[in-house]
Amino acid sequence: MALVGNNLGFYYQKDRWIFKNISLAVAPGEVLGLSGYSGCGKTTLARVLAGYVSSREGRVSLDGGTWGKGKFRPVQLIYQHPEKAIDPKWRMGEVLTEAYKPEPDILEAFEIREEWLKRWPIELSGGELQRFCIVRALHPQTKYIIADEMTTMLDAITQAKIWHSLLNICQSRKLGLIVVSHEKSLLGRVCDRMYEVGHG
Amino acid sequence: MRAGQKKPLLQVDIHEGEIVAVVGASGSGKSLLAHAVLGILPGNAICEGRIIYRGEELTEERKLRLRGREISFIPQSVNYLDPLLRVGKQVQIGLEKSTAQLKQRELFRQYDLQERDGQLFPYELSGGMLRRVLFATSVREGVRLVIADEPTPGIHPQALAEILKQLKTFAEEGARVMLITHDIMSALEIAHRVAVIKDGCTVEIAEASAFEGRGEGLKTEYTQRLWSALPQNDFDGEFIEKGAVGHGFSGK
Image (cartoon, rainbow over all chains, first blue to last red; front, side, top):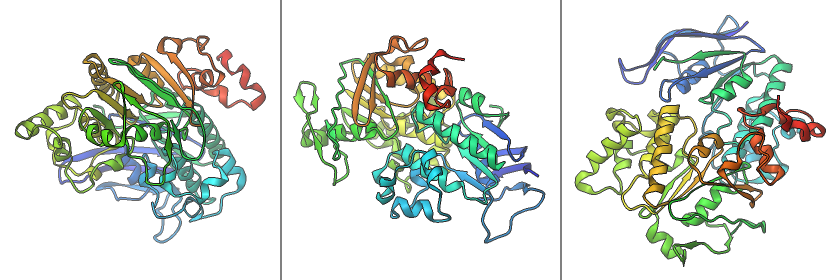
């Protein structure tokens, strides 16, 4: 039982490898930190692990198998730029409930206010949008979460609260969590284990 | 200055050659403050109050004339880049035509981007690289006010140092710098003063030197909490139930 990447390699332009020979695994309930140079391929690796793109080399396996097409993806990715991960022409209520209807307690845990649901994405700040992206990813069938620079747009107090809420949920639901960040001190606070992408 | 329907009091002043960091809660109106100064608020926004720039009121016409010239803006969202234009070209906009390409390559080198990266479209760059491209678009001759809205997330330490150095250079050359950020630790390396914003109001404007130790030098409880919640400080203090928050400052 784990999300495993085996010997992963990826390029956009032929022979310009972004990364190669990356093997890593995260088990349910575990928190793995990913760090590395900006441009070393952390986000691309996150997209490969979440199944948005296929690796050019190696394979990703989920709890021993792969996942079927057209089904819910148990690996959910929280993007670095929430404003690019939300349809600008949907109201926030629709964005939130597209895949499931979150309970009020989870909205409260991430400090999402009722009044925001009627707003358009442009009427919320980056940090407010990101909280919708987090809740949206916490579908009941989610098994693994990849958080790509998830809280860089949040103030320190909100950041601490959001991490507390997310870590609690991951622990109680036994979700595996991959945390991508440049903030060494944050990674030190939340992760069980670290993986350095590239060695530049 | 007021934004939206709230009636808060938001007040910030920046002197010549000074760097003022603007920090505070997510959604407190930091970006709106920047957009108001630049005159790029959305059409349905209501903005009241006065903005004085170099002794004169900053009117909408004046904003239009000065922004992109002596007022430079580094936006928070990577949506501000043209998705259909190669990033090298975007950095060349506003540079002296004859030397634009040369200057752009120089800027790329300075911010640790490869020359061939200039040929890429924004979607082909990482978040940290896009930040550096956005930053490079702001470095122009004769800049007198720089508004940087979160220029540092997702950047590795070396490129971060380069960006902080450039902001400092702007100030040393006499520009005023507003650095909007959540990265208090980086801001403190260069800022003279720190304005703390919450719910559209200025909570406190503190000297950068007050941010040290357990924050005893900070005047308001909110600023102290903000300081102590940093992962470098007492991160977990905010985790403990409400009743215990007051004791969160005692450290680990």
